[in-house]
Length: 151
Image (cartoon, rainbow, N blue to C red; front, side, top):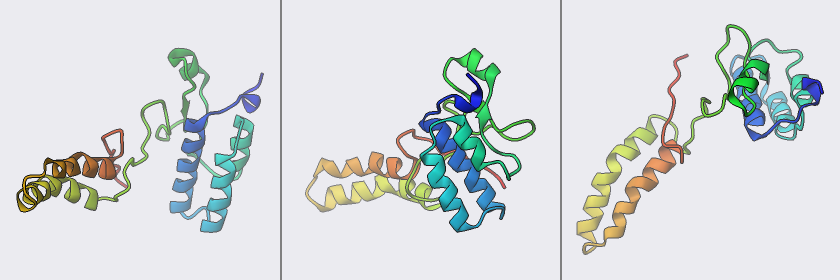
């Protein structure tokens, strides 16, 4: 079976969308074309489907990495030589939260104080302290961390 016929999973689709986003930010794709290709990437079933989306674009683009697949078991892939790795198992650069920086950090930092004030203001209802982990999940996602990239 060739790599083009090999089936892909959610992680590969998400990495393809992230790579397309980088091309959009670099000005290689217009918003409409990015949306169209992202939809196709989300509906892709094989590596061949993804490869067609990147045929006219330079690196980064996801591709199967046979050495990483053999070493790690699950499919891992790289963005090619010299480019940063995109979406390797557990090592992707997607922000997990719903709140963009720097607001996420501010909300997370201030949520304990808001919970304490609300606790005393409303007659000692301990449920206000649940705002602290909720703010963290909103800011950083369920994974609990956000990777910072410098451009």
